[in-house]
Structure formats: C-alpha cells, structure tokens
Image (cartoon, rainbow, N blue to C red):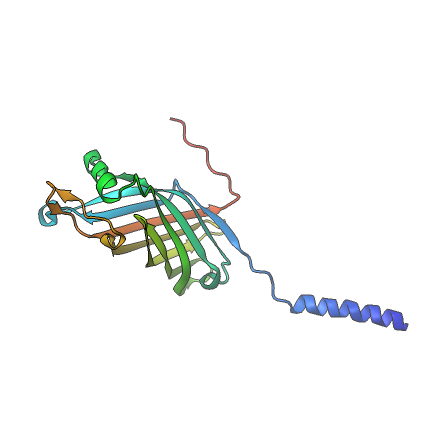
Length: 213
C-alpha cells in the first residue's frame, strides 16, 4: 500500500469511526391536537350547592400541538393548547350567557391558552407506550397567566396517536374571575374541576372530512 493510499484509508477509517461513535439523531414527533376528539369539561359548584349540586360545561379546543422524542419525553416533551373561551356550553343558555358575559368576560378574553414548560414525575407503566406524569406549564385565563401542575395518564399507539387524560382543580378567582351569582347575591363555588382528554395525531395525517349535515 502506497503512502497516498495509506492516507486515504486512514481518512476513511477516521470518518467511519466518527459516524458510528456519534449519537443517533432523536426521533422527534410532531403531533397536532385532534380538536374533534379532544374533550374538556369544567365543573363548578352551583350557588346553594348543598341543594342545587354542581354544573358542568364543555369547551372546544381551537388548535394545539404535542411534540418531543418518545425515547426521552421528560427532557423533550412540549404541549401547547388554545381553547375557545366563547365555546362554553351547559344545559342552560341563560347560564352560559351570564358566565360568558360576567365571569369569563369573553368580549375581552376570547381564548384560554396552556403552554408547558417541563415534565415531572414521569413513570412508565409500559415503556414507550403508557406512562403517568405531571405536566408543568403556564395557563393564561381571563388575561392572567399562572403556573399550574397537571397530572396526566398518557399513551401512544404504534400509529403515533397520542392521548392524555387528567383532572385538575384550581381556584379560578386567582385569575381575576368573579364567581357567578344567583339572584345577584348568592355566589357559585370558587373552585373549578377541569377534566380533560387530549388526543393528538401526526401533523401530516389528513384531517377527516366533516360529516354531512
């Protein structure tokens, strides 16, 4: 082998070693929230809850995304969701109008947004398939942003369909929202119980056509 050939061989060997020694690129998933399959339900005690019980209302998600490396979701996972505050709906149109007008004040604050900042307490029940975790992030509601901790049960299918179920309770007056009142005097409960199921699919997966009316 000539000197020139030895140099070329050494160069090729060096490149090969560096390629095999380099860490593999992470598989970053980019998912979009399926707004039709996602469900968000808010439950609040009625005025005179002892007699009247509580009331549940639904919200619709406008847009959302979930991304990260499935091999290391604690370090790379990110969630961002925007909710249509004006979509609040219960079994009473009168109640809905009062909540939208006087409590949430949707004429001023038409959307609600959550942006995650980190993931804590990740525990795999089935590696790469099912896990529990706490998603920490900033919730912007009624023009006020506060950090919240959201416990979730999450799973991902072989088709890369992601779902997360959870429940969180917080005092909505911390966001400057005044409790709705019955007869102008009796206030509703200050705590809201937010139950949700978030579903996300690959960003490049076609959106199903709406069902014919």
